[in-house]
Length: 194
Image (cartoon, rainbow, N blue to C red; front, side, top):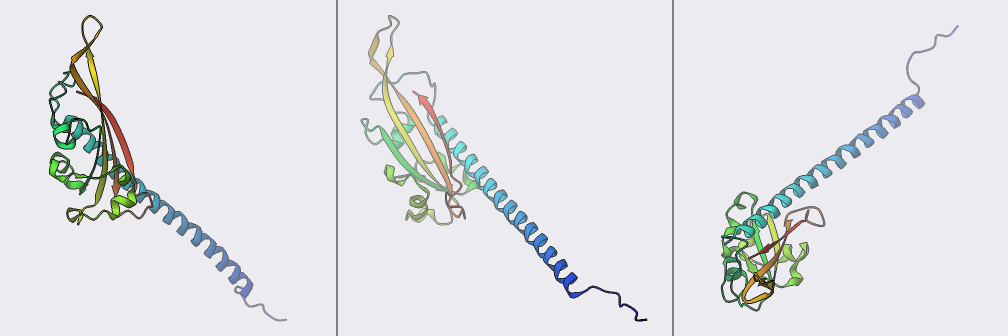
C-alpha cells in the first residue's frame, strides 16, 4: 500500500494565490481611493478657510457703520483701492498667498492685481505670469460689483442728495499646486451696503 504525501497540489496553490491577489488588489484600491478623498477634502478645507478669511477682511475694510449712507463723491477703502473711477461698477482682482500669511496678505491693497473677468478660472490663475506668485500656494479671484442706490427720507420719498453703494463680493480660491483638475476651488460671496 502506497502512502499519500501530505501537501498542497499545484491547483490549490494557484487558487490560493488568485484569492490573495484579488484581496490585495481590493485593499490597495480602497486605500488609494481613501487617500485621494482625504487629500481632496484637506485641500477643500484650506481653500474654504482662505476664501472665508479674504471675504471677512474685505467686509471689514473701512467699515465704520454699514448703515451709514455716503454721498456719491465720497470714497471708502474698498472704492479707493479697487475702483479707479466713481463710475466703475466691477472690479476683478487676483491675489496670491500662502496659507500662513493669510491674515496679513489680503489687508495690503498692493498685493492685489487688476485683471479682467475672463481670468475667473483655475487654468488662468495657475498660468498667470506674476513675479510675486513664486512660492505661493494659493490664488484667489475676487469680483466686486458695485451698484448705487438712494436713501428714502422720512416722507417715504427718494432723497437724491444721499447715495449709498451696494457691493456684491465674490471670492474664488484655488490651490495652485493641486493635483485635482479644479484646484479644489471654493467660492463664497456676500453683500455689503455702505
